[in-house]
Image 1 (cartoon, rainbow over the protein chains, first blue to last red):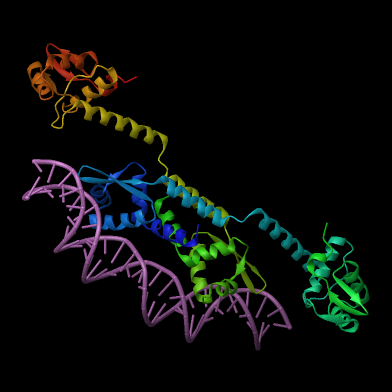
Image 2 (cartoon, protein in one colour):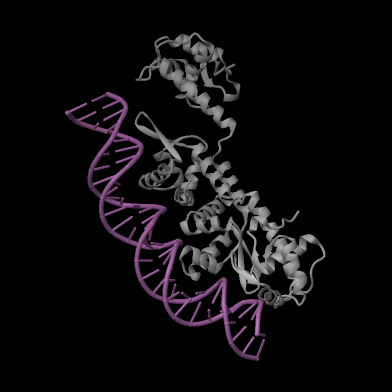
Length: 193
Length: 193
DNA sequence: ATGTAAATTAGATTAACATCTAATTAGATG
DNA sequence: CATCTAATTAGATGTTAATCTAATTTACAT
C-alpha cells in the first residue's frame, strides 16, 4: 500500500463528523436524512462527507424504495488499521541492530576521552574490535597510506601507534605491501563472535 | 477512548509530511535537521509537525550532546490502530439481531399484500408468530378492548377474525376476562423456538 | 406521464493549517 | 562567560475544506 492512500484515508477519518458517521453506521445502515437528523446537520453536508467516505471505500450504499441506505465497509477499515500497524512496526532485524549500536556506543564512551583519545586498548577481544573500528572510521577506502602517515594518524588517538597498527593488520582491517597500508573491504574484516 | 482523541490522532496522521516522518522514524531515531534534509523542508516546518506528533504521543525525544533525537512511539500507534478496528466492528449480538430482523421482514412481505392485508395464515408456527406479532403492533399496551372492537381491528387485516383472535389468546399475546381483551406484557408472549 | 421525497451539486463563507522567513531560545562545550 | 549549533517561536501567506442555502437531479410511486 502506497503512503498516499494511507494519508487520504486517515485525513478522511480525522474529522469529527465523519468519525461519528462511522460510529453510527457500525450499529447498522442508515439513510442520509436520518444521519443528518442525528447529527444536527444539513443533508447537503452529509452528502459532502459521504462522498469522502465513499472515495476511500469506507462505506457503500444500497437503495431500498425511495431512500438510499449507507453501510459501513468494515473490511476496508480493518485493512487500513493494519496498514498503520505495519507502518509503525520496525522489524526484528532493525531492533537487533539498534541494540548492537547502543552497545558499541557504550564501549566507545568508556574507552575514549571526551576529546576523542583512546584511554587504553581493551583486553577483551570484542571490545577491542569495537575500539579499532572506531579509529578506522577516519581512514579513506581505497587510499594508500605510507607507514609514517598512518602512524601520525594513529597517534591522534594513542601514543602506542605500533601496537595499534599491528592490530589493524592482525585483525584483517588493513593489509600491507612494501610498507604501504590500505583498508581492506569491510567483508574481509574480523567479525565479532 | 472518547471519539475526540481519535479524531485528533487521525487528523495528525492524515498528513503526507507527518506520515513520512513516522515511516522514517520506524527505521530508527533521527534528529530534526536530518528529517528536514531528507524531506526537503525547513527545520521550522519539522518542529511544527513534531509538535503535533508529540501532542498525540506518537513520538518522544532524547537529547544526545547538542542534538535531539526523535523516536517513534510504536505502542501508541498500535493502540490507535486497534481503536479504529474496534470502532468499525459491530459486535456479534448486533449482527444476529440484523439477521433476525431481515428474516422477519421477508416473512411479512410474503404474507401481507402491499396495502397491508394478510393473504393467509401461515401453517408453520414460526412464521405464524411473526405474522401475529406484526398485527399486534397496532394495539396499545394497557388498553382494554371490547370483543367487537377487537374484531373490527383484526378485520382490517383478514376476514377470519375469529381464528386470529383465538390465536392471539392461544399464543399468550392477549388475555381475556368477561369478553374484555388486553395485551399481555411482552415477556409473557410465545417465543419462537 | 407526473408528482414527490431523497440525494446531490453549485457557490459562498469562514476557519484551519502547512509552509516559509526571520528572530529567539536552549543547551553543550570550550 | 562566550560561542556555536540545533530547536523553537512568531508572524505572514496561500490553500484546503467544513458548512450552509438554494437550485437541480434521481428514481420510485401514483
